[in-house]
Length: 235
Image (cartoon, rainbow, N blue to C red; front, side, top):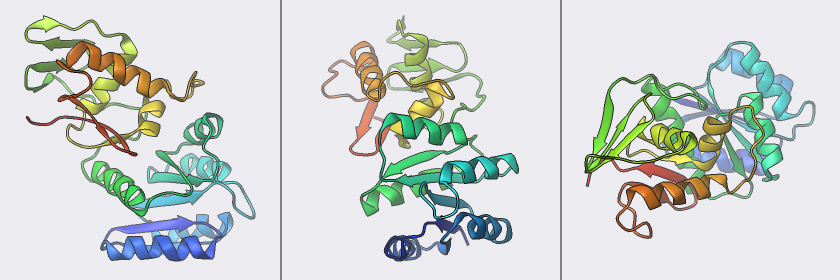
């Protein structure tokens, strides 16, 4: 059975996440500090880790760095009360796959858990990379050619910037499934400093202006409220 692990020293949050996880058919284990959590991670080998940034013995960023240094590819979702772009950037540089700000909706955490587990089961690479696909992806009258920085709409080439293409290519790597804003930021900028926390919104708007008949009512690049974006897999 799929196992979710939490490292957090807040008993009420432990209880809440345990309830969310178990009600949805997953096993659950938790630790209250970094040292115990690292040992439990090695012994329990969970499928996904939810990691608090502020721990009593070590901060979550340092713990995440240690986990990645050991070669562990487990999906890691950070929890933090700090939602500014600097903290998110530090988290992704440490090796996180996602970053969720407290307080959060139970449904949002569950959606993110399911998305990361699904990609792990499908053999998807970690955030920051696009699957090395060949060929193209087509939906409706839109066609994207992987690795070629080419998008065509109704047999006409669409003039996208490199980052606009990379955003669209990331969504096309798993059409129909939701990518969070944090995943998109981590993919496009990687270890580089992110210039503006609203960059994803800006890029999405620019792409829609180029590929949608009505950018205010998109059919291809779809917003999933409070979560992120997805590329349509059918009409």
